Image (cartoon, rainbow, N blue to C red; front, side):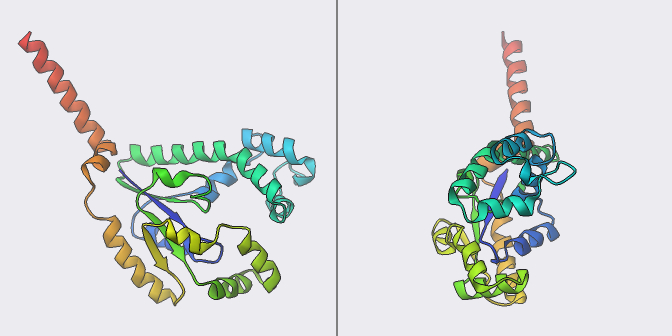
Length: 229
């Protein structure tokens, strides 16, 4: 099984690349979707976060007010690290469960869309690692246009993340998304050829089919040995 790590930065176009993978039949496990599920009312993650940040972050129905929580942690690195630390075990478990479900369905290539891939140390479980990169000026402009925010606010949000230039040094594949959507699609087609290449023997062994082959081989060996005895 080939588990691809996909990451980038705010406004880099990572979500667009994620959707391109889906459109080409490659399943994507989205860490943001998992994060939303682990914050649902009554879950372990919900209890941890409410215990740390108080009832003020809750909506009248008891669900977490995500925009309000985001405002609380946005300009406070310590609180942001605390939130990440509290949710990390639940998000990791949720991602593993989603990968397992896809493994059971027989998928051999899976994409993990994780904004904090390096920060959460999840890059060691993925190969290749794809970083969607964009030049700083374009990133700033796109973020301002997308969210209708000021340059100062946009810069603060960008600076709250690991720099894209640092992420690209850790990547196996860099998708430069500084151009047009058509340019991005052209880059993606090249990446698609790479990620769809035949599995290595190690990757095949980790797939469901590989596990079945191994099981049958072991069972056959046991039967042969018993007959020999």
